[in-house]
Amino acid sequence: MKRRDFLRTTGVSATTLAAGSPFILTNRPWSSDIVRVGVIGTGSRGSGLIRTMGRIPTLKVTAGCDILPFRLEEALQHADNATAYQDYRALLDDEEVDAVIVATPLYLHSQMANEALDAGKHVYCEKTMAYNAEQTIGLVSAANQHDSQVFQVGHQYHFSRLYQRVVKIIQGEHIGKVTAFECQWNRNGDWRRPVPEPKYERTINWRMYREYSLGLLAELSSHQIDIVNWITQAHPLRVIGTGGIDYWQDGRETLDNVHVIFDYPDGIKAKFTCTTANAYDGYQIKVMGDKATIIVKPNEAWIYPEEKKSQETGWVDGVSGATKSTLEKYGAIPINVEHTEPTQQALEDFAESVLHQKPPISDVYTGAETSFAVQMALQSILEQRTIDWQDRFTSSLN
Image (tube, rainbow, N blue to C red; front, side, top):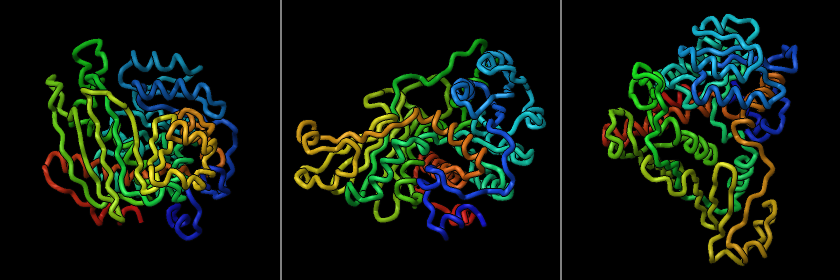
């Protein structure tokens, strides 16, 4: 039975899985209490993951791979006795590697994740999961064929205990009927990485070039699209968007600003904005219900009750730390949950999934839904028209 079919027929929730569901992917017991990890791609994200794994006892980086030797050498300084490779296929042949993290440019995710599955490795694939619809559909099929192996997608906020609490509050109808989302991830800077020599420009700044990247939507907005899909328990029905290369006239090919609106079931609208010329309020998700609004930051969240509902405070009793006096004094109720930095939590949960053979809550299905949505949004901007969800997307997920 596919994982999605299991969840659908038994009613097991993603939150239950995160809390330690006994659901088993395979009867084969894991033979160690440490997962040996090979990291493919040791740029800014890959090297950051290596440093984070140094704080996680259940993960050990035993190998790394990058086509740029100076980046590989620098990254592996944070991993004891890890083997260095310039060819990822050699890393996949390494028997000292149990699981692979794919942290390469987006256009390579599908190829490398597929080959990692074929090599018998568990896979942590960075977001966005794939570059186009065909690659996304192919990865779903591959993960289903290798269903004894963990396939986790790097939408790290999905693993945050704070975000899990927020989703539970929203789905528990504490803020009433949700009608809209306003999401932004704004920065003020050119988004470029320093290049030691001009010949490395496209290799290091791959996010700027259409051949390798889908730009801001894939690299930033995808996290928030994943959260909205999770909260609504749905995928978008259609999208309309605009954007352009309007500020940074530096030869880039991917957009420096994007503004898109998705239609979700039940009339819910979700707006996503990502700019590079103004950083006011930075990262934020606003969830609007008819009883209250929730504002979510990377590591903090608050509830703002509607004024007409301010006296009806009984519904906040389920929120940790919520009191009437807090509401009256500040006009907002903090959502207080003990939680770890989201990337570290995602990696800890990946180790837990591999060691105990439990499916991750950000898996190939949730990753695919977000991947399709990102592709739809970019197509809408480039073609200046509304783009609908396709039946073949749904077919690939069932």
